[in-house]
Length: 262
Image (cartoon, rainbow, N blue to C red; front, top):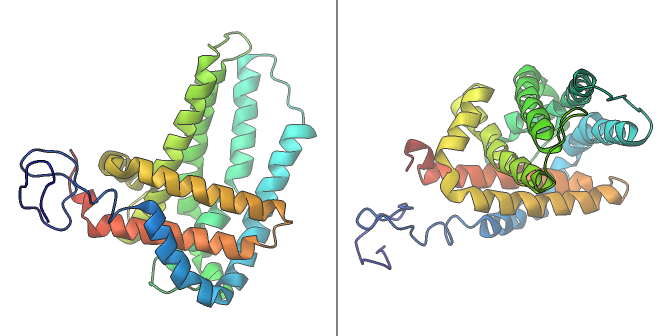
């Protein structure tokens, strides 16, 4: 492979030209998130029935409780926030409550990262419960980040924020998702702690951050549509999403993106 800018000879996995320092076509082609998703879907769909039991467990223990909590907090459980302390306490209660159930979704990575097959059986997921504590820590770190940016961007009862910060909040939230999703695969692949995995993802994967965000956006849309259809299609869309994240993260590992940073 050669650089299209300076014609320098490059290795097949070079993301940046060793001569002119410009980005190679690998990010757009070999590391295309949509190409990776299509490849995953082509391998997963013929054997999708193998993942229905594990997906059902995740939906019942994770997705449904999270959806119920969000629904209750948004319309039926009114937590007074007349002071900054009360607002912080309310954010803490909501974040911890939801964080308890998020690991039931994420712990599937413990099972699927042990092999390259496209299966997620009930036995795989139930045996992965041993990973619940580390995913709880991972979820609490994410909850802390969410609470901090919420307070900064939306202000407190005694300190109003600028309206433009609402848009900043959306950007920061999506940025965190693009960091955290490959971090769960890094955590399993390299046996890192939750915090080490997040730092690795943040420091080394910024060259493909937009690719990760695009993959995340597509998967969120797919699962949102599935969730609106009474959760039934989630038994297909959810494991597809998990395998897509695993496969794309592994592709990043193949390009040795965790071995250097610009």
